[in-house]
Length: 52
Image (cartoon, rainbow, N blue to C red; front, top):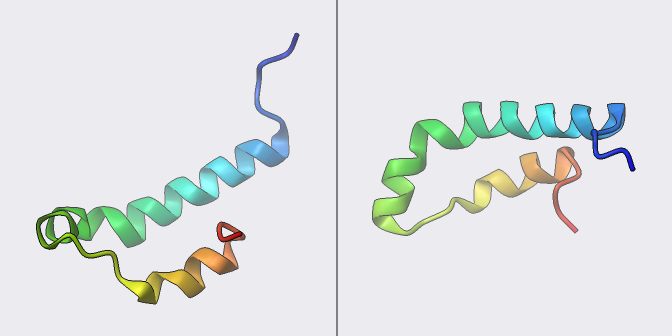
């Protein structure tokens, strides 16, 4: 059984990582303290295909 990620899965993983590092990480402490996640990120998440 092969448990390695496919090329497509690796691309998705990299896209999500880059998004998180650039759009979420710089604000994560503030958002955690205020218990707020900005709705303004939804369009960007949708662009990446991360919303159902």
